[in-house]
Image 1 (cartoon, one colour):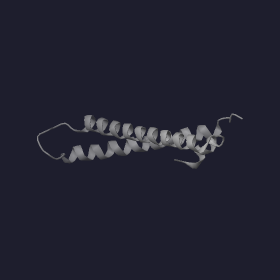
Image 2 (cartoon, helix red, strand yellow; image 1 turned 180 degrees about the horizontal axis):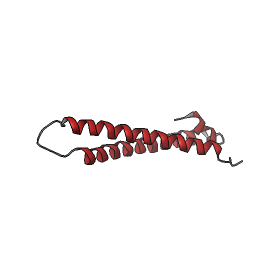
Image 3 (cartoon, one colour; image 1 turned 60 degrees about the vertical axis):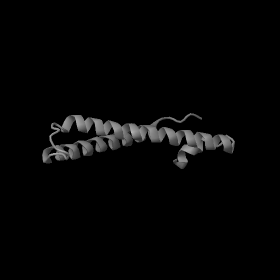
Image 4 (cartoon, one colour; image 1 turned 90 degrees about the vertical axis):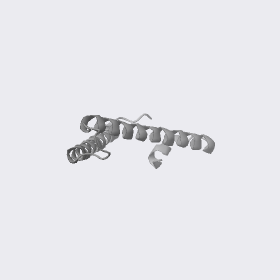
Length: 93
């Protein structure tokens, strides 16, 4: 977990800090798996047309690669935008 995330837990006992860190790690893993599953499902539905072969046809493979690239670029851009907004947000003191 990011050290900046732990900064907000300074007043907590070490045991509680460890529990919070574990919970945050689990949530991050869950979100990563959801994103991966969403990517796979979306690109499969959009790109795979035929089930006559074990492997993807060339156009299907190209479509999947483009789809995955777009999805990941979009996800990165959204994450960057949230980070920008978070930096500009007023802090609660």
